[in-house]
Image: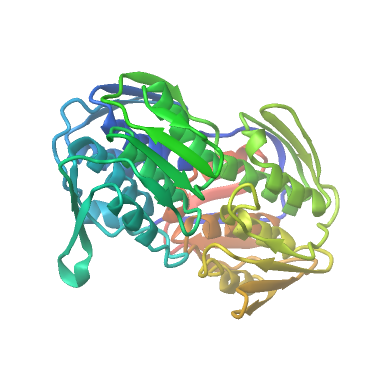
Length: 426
């Protein structure tokens, strides 16, 4: 596994174009199984999670090809309904093939998914919802870790989600697109990635109403057709680079930004003292002083503050003037980077009762050898290293490549001294 070496203390300044959205690309790639033809995906990010999803497509019998940031998928010859356990264990989003394969072939065998260790993330919501659509479920293998779903016909139904789970909402939509009748999802997730999936499916011939709201209605159709679709930019990548500028007293211009989807992130960064100007797809951010503390920051489902930005904001608040409190309400294990930040001199206290972190800001952090435990936590350690004094080595940095095309390339463009290095570098 690779590491990242950061020499801190360099002011970040420059212009960057934001890559395509990871969280939009993954469900859309799974959804291409539903079209017995060709899908062209433009602005598709070249990241590890996308490569894993493509590998599964190819195992199912699809053909894929790249042309710069455009991905072509031919699913006309797909015939396999079993997703290998090895492929599923590499990433959480592989569970989206549950609904997509079931929707096309009326049968699927898939293992429980893997991915970042940021919490339990059970798939009960997915399975309970799909079961109501005339789908029989069996659990096989050791500890019932293999899921086998089958049906003679998928029948639309009313689905009431106990929690607005993004993955469960997406899987119900994928299952319902080629069903008989109408499926109504109550308490659906409202994240932009749900809207992106719906936009793709609608352009391919699906009938979906209510995208972006807590009530989504899917009327089943007989088939989908070929489509060319452009993925939106990545709101979390944009937020990550904005947070880095906030921590480093820098300034930058970000282009190809999904500004309409990053309100909560911009609001919090403004609270830290950043000056932010935005147009439809461009953000100019400037941070000239030590960050201000934030009394209370809670992660919430969209449109609230995203859990995927919590770790990055924690790194900013480590430098804040005063004490800040973060309450993580989505994933119970998303504080794994706290021990690593403490190695750099951060003062952070955790309270397990309400899953909160109390951050007492310090004027400076110092470089250290730290470990990336998950995708966003790894990116947050890069931010801390950029603003710290001395050299920081982030080990196990491969997980960062799951969501960022080339984080070293991008920060170098902003003036940072950062590079990939061997695992044992010091």
